[in-house]
Image (cartoon, rainbow, N blue to C red; front, side, top):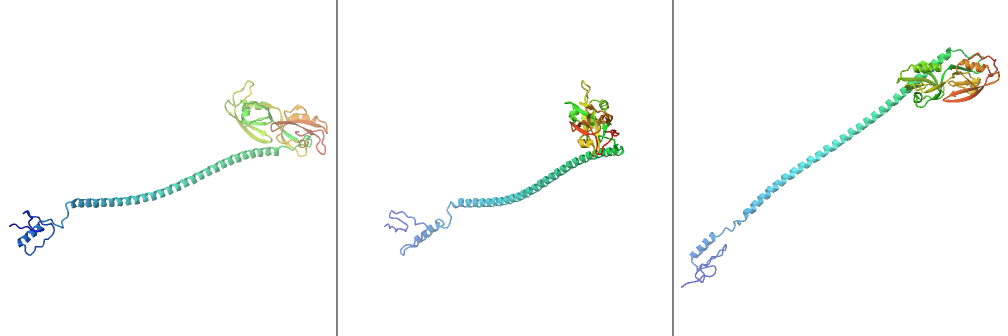
Amino acid sequence: MATSKKPGGGKSAAGGEKPAARGRTTRPKADEPVADLEVTAVELSAGPDPVARPAGDGGLAAATAALRESAGDLAKATDALRAATRDVRALRAELDELRGHVRSVVKEAADGLAGVRRLRTGAEAATEQVAALKEEAAGLGERLGELRQEAGRPAAEPGNRLGVEVDHGVVVAEVLPGGMAATAGLVHGDVVESVNGTPVHTAAGFRDAVLGVPDGSELTVRIRRGGSPLHMVGRVGPAGEDGNRVGVVVDPGVVVTVVTPASPAAAAGLARGDVIDRAAGQEVHTGEDLRAAVRAVRPGGEIALAVARDGEVREVVARLDPPGGAGPDDGGKG
């Protein structure tokens, strides 16, 4: 007679065996044979290890390893970034130091350039001063020579009725436009004293001195204007149709070198350097011409003089009797 086992036993009502639940221990009842208990133990021992990891744990381990490797790479990258940051900071510090050095160099260069400019300005000023001193020294030398000449010249005689002493002179009457004289700066009334160092006293002497200078050569004319000596420099060109190579027309005249104080000439306003062109309406070429005109005036009379000064010609009137009276003879030069 077939028997059926209760749930948890070895057989079912249909006669088949029902497997015992996995992982669960079935306690045998008192009336069950021992063989069934052993089978249950065998079944339990043949089941899976409840402590073993499932089959998917191998992929997790690989992912963990990869994550650890990535973490290591990230740590290395972080260290490299920190090192690069330190390098950048060091380079920035060096750049700031270099900028400061460049600023210092630029400032020193600017200060040096300013110093050079100051030195150049000082040198130019010194050069101008030297040139001015040379010109002044030349003028003083000429004045010294004139004073020496005047010191060796006899004093005006008591019979000098006009009260002047004169020298021959070549007076510029007209300056032609476009000529050498105009370029050099000569003006009407200038008194020509020398040409290239050769003294001239007459219009003929002036002409001869100019003719001796080759075409295209430099010509230095020493003149007197308003009592002061000047040097005019120009370049001589070929003569024009009238043969005038300098571009001036000269007039006769005498140059006043001395004016006696309290004399008729001083009272009339004559001064050293004036040029007397005419006296009593007559041209004056020499000192003798002026003396002759003065002698012709009666005692207490007046004489009209055409005087050129600074390029302008004016007429002055001098009363010939000096203070205290004088005789008709004018043994002096005026």
